[in-house]
Length: 240
Image 1 (cartoon, rainbow, N blue to C red):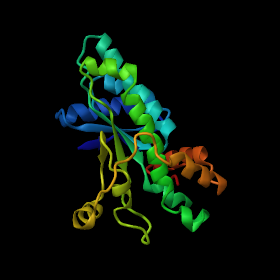
Image 2: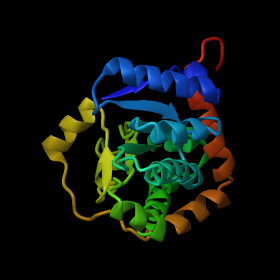
Image 3: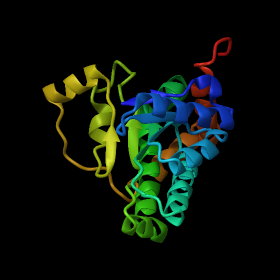
């Protein structure tokens, strides 16, 4: 279960950390995660919350770069706990949003590219994730008892009625990941979902696919920032 700090705090580091500590203390259950947006202002709060021993679900991630910044913040919190003689087994997930990429570009790219951008971004991020898991600093943390910060696939319900209702579930089957799917998608998977291949740890064809989107005029880095900002602002009253 995840409890979310108020999105009103997405751009306020101090208040985000205070709210995370308060929610976790009030919940009183060690398996409760606190959601903190992976914004620039959220990164210091994530590090401090992990150092405080609070399980964190980092939300509103869209790109490899945003994920890597979060992974660094998590690692800093864990390393500080190790240095302080505290247990390093603090749980965390990094939630990458998938379908919003495709919804954002659907009307602006050729039909042949529809419903491919989210999966390509997931593949690129998964490659970075597997690299992080095999890095020397993570191996040292593992040896000290740390738990991996799992990559979590979010927004995995298909938005395009012309596409498969299990499109993202089938494409993103991968070790060391979590998939939080809507109930309708879960039921569809149970009814007619079949898996034939796992997500390649080397990213597969993601860079080739992303190059095609660039040719079609999609500024991927800019769009990733825009999607995160829109995600944070959409919860704030009086903003759009």
